[in-house]
Image 1 (cartoon, protein in one colour):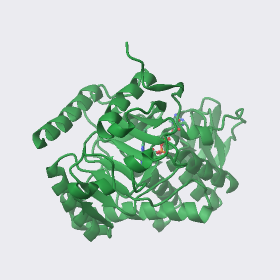
Image 2: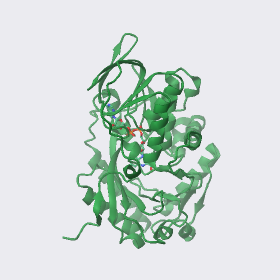
Image 3: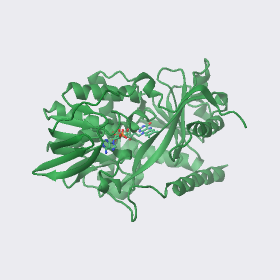
Image 4: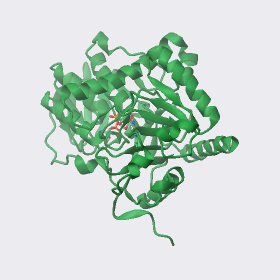
Length: 436
Ligand SMILES: Cc1cc2nc3c(=O)[nH]c(=O)nc-3n(C[C@H](O)[C@H](O)[C@H](O)COP(=O)(O)OP(=O)(O)OC[C@H]3O[C@@H](n4cnc5c(N)ncnc54)[C@H](O)[C@@H]3O)c2cc1C
């Protein structure tokens, strides 16, 4: 049996938790009453809490696990203004006015993230390093060029197409057929960004409680009763911010969100010159497949981060690391000798219509459905959900009022996911084979 390409001190927890461990303090008693309860302590929940607390609303934020346990401290830390639905599809589905407004909202969300980090002084290595999006086939390259033109026209997105002959300046790989360069895209350290947001929300007066799973939310008088495993809280406002971790406490939302697992790997420290060979400009990289690959330098510039094989939650992290390593070696042969030091998984929340959703059901507010692209959108929609709960017109978004679809027989357990992932992988392989 060949040895797995992992380091002896391999960890299956996020690399981000090294610099920013989850806070696991002993649980404190919960209050019996608050103006607002936010369920979920990721970017959505904390952004909502920060907004509410700054407006003088007494706010309690609850998590079933330690604060930040979900995707917000498990993601790849790449930031941009790409919605899960492409600009052309937004325009054909919603028309140019509303589709364009959605694309502009994504740009506004990303600009807002940059402003928040700067204004709050959150040290999280945020930089607008840019992103190279590799084209898996020549046809994808043509489609990307069209999308870039459209995003530039609708929302002022800045970028350029890089033909295959010139892509070596952006990426040390011959895998792609050129690609799209998004110069304003960025990257950050998700653990440090999350901690910064948590500290700002608490400093503003919000109470953040881990290990307080919400079991149900029901009407009580003119407000709500939030039943947790550690007691009940009466609140005027409830915002559910559980995205890919939504459970039986929110049956209506659970029927609308598909939890999709994704794994990220980080290598052992690399030798001098390797990162410059893999990602010469220091930009982040993703690609045009359905089941995308992504790569970036670690924020301290010592390791290579690589992600592939979205879809299923991992059973054996070492084997998942080996699976991702095979892809890494195929795309970047010069990095094939690297061993994987970290491989972890998180759950993304997909909506069936591939749209982010914000709204209220029976008075309980929600913001979720970022489909794997939520660092800036979760921050933005969390804030918007809070403003909407305060009846502030600044809370309006072009996503308001979208129907939130489900599917017959779907109750929150994605039994169809293994087959769907196999089908999407087959489509990716077919496209590539046709282009060969
Ligand atoms: C592996 C991976 C890589 C990603 N990479 C990127 C990327 O590079 N760029 C990007 O923009 N996006 C990326 N994303 C997506 C992004 O991380 C998410 O969209 C975003 O973090 C969602 O934030 P959230 O606050 O809505 O949810 P989460 O951060 O998932 O928080 C939800 C929280 O709800 C809690 N919860 C659930 N049920 C209950 C309950 N009953 N009671 C109390 N608490 C509860 C959970 O414990 C969890 O902490 C990635 C996601 C994953 C998983």
